[in-house]
Each structure stands twice: as structure tokens, then as C-alpha cells.
Amino acid sequence: MKIKILESAKEDLKEGFYFYESQAKGMGNYFLDSLFSDIDSLRLFSGIHSIYFDKYYRLLSKRFPFAIYYRIEENEVRIYAVLDCRRNPAWIRKRLQ
Image (cartoon, rainbow, N blue to C red; front, side, top):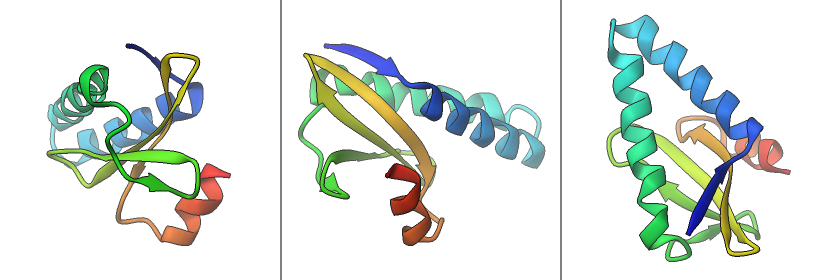
């Protein structure tokens, strides 16, 4: 299945990269490698995750406290957001609207 990362999700990944890189040199790259590995797993496992906010599937990252919010549209996985799970749930809901 084809995977498309939308601009909003790319921005989320950049923010995560800069946050973790500021914590320790090289950690930002490790963050991106881990998240892209999780995203690649959607080629096989898309659609099996729980639905949140009435329309998004949510994949939890294996190594970081981040969630990948996606939808399956026209035989394509579209990633809408990659958000820190430690954020206020009301903020996450608003971000996804």
C-alpha cells in the first residue's frame, strides 16, 4: 500500500526532530529513524489500529511517546499528524480537526 505523509505531519516530524536533537546530539536522527520505521509498518498493518476522534486510526510509536494519526483513502495511507502523546488530549483533538 502506498503511504503519503502530508505537510502537517512533516512539520510534526521536524518539531520532534529539533526537540530530541536539542536533548542530545544524534537523538533527533534516532527519533526520525524510529518514526519512519513505524510509518513503514503501515504498508502491512494499516487499518488494524483503533479509531480516534471519529475518523483517524492511531498507531503508537514503539520507541517514543508519539502517535501517528492516519486515514486510508483511495487505497493510500495518508498520515495527517505525528503528535506527542504527552500533550493535552483537548489540544490533540483540536489539532486534528
